[in-house]
Image 1 (tube, rainbow, N blue to C red):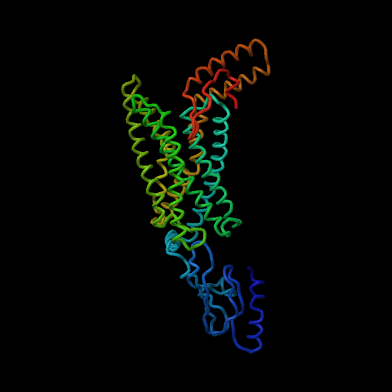
Image 2 (image 1 turned 90 degrees about the vertical axis):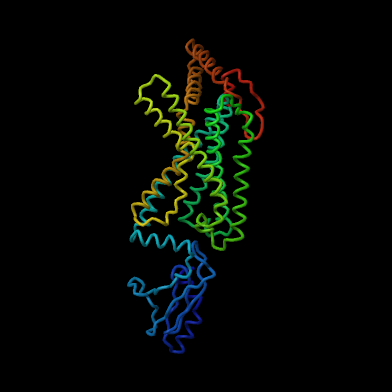
Length: 429
């Protein structure tokens, strides 16, 4: 609705007021609700609009002054349009955010939010490109198919789903195509929470697998891969389904605004927080083992410390321990710099998370780089031909024989159909 359709809606009532020569306030549209002509020195109310953070069962109201003008509540910019009191419409959760923004100062809250969203869009875009490229590499070269990369690929898929859904939701905030459609917006947030839960589950599995590989003398990972797959996906589906059903029965607002502050969100937050804490314990124990092994080596003290710090920095984003930042209730901040520090750091690490894990698990992985380099060298040698090309082909074949000694891949939730890799050209799908 706009101002013209609003005026047309109350055209007959306006004509009656004019013909009776009474003092009244004219029809007006305040960008949310349409208010009809109202007699002077009276107030009018109607149900709150259906908007995020608004309770449509409450009432908004306006006052027509004795002079036949809408009250502007002392705001000069509202002299013509008048002031609508939506105070009672705002939910308690939205009130908390509003009060925080009032404490931070005029415009500080919006500035931080807009800057954070720009960081998110850059990080999510880079993560999207990096994750797709990594999955193409892992699926294209058969020699890379083993239990470790099976876990990597599932983590990439879960993270990629989260990135895509976030980009869709953020892009829609300008056009409101999803938000204004019943059930579609809620479905997007259900998929978002499922992908977030699955991502944390697979980060936990990555941490568990790495921890077992370093602490268990004989660890046969292939015997656990099916359990990992079921735990990573089915557990996420179960938790998300229970949470979604609880939201359907308890939430009345549009698009489940600020659902992450509601008590039933702990259906998801509780298990995932526990997994993050366990992963942090895994991380500390892994670093302890790395430091002990470095001390037993012949390296200098400074070199040992450098390698230990490097290992810790690499493991933090891989094991999802930075997700603990999301547990902080940002409504408690009393200064703009504290809120800005939390927002920039939290959303930087979460939006660039896919980019980090793709680089560390794929692009910086020596085995992956060897396979890609050798495949490219073979492709160039076949194009150029000659003795040099034949020699290079023999060297690449020997390299692939070495790489193919890795455990055969057990595909997610089913056995690999073939474990025989004999020729290099069979490593390409």
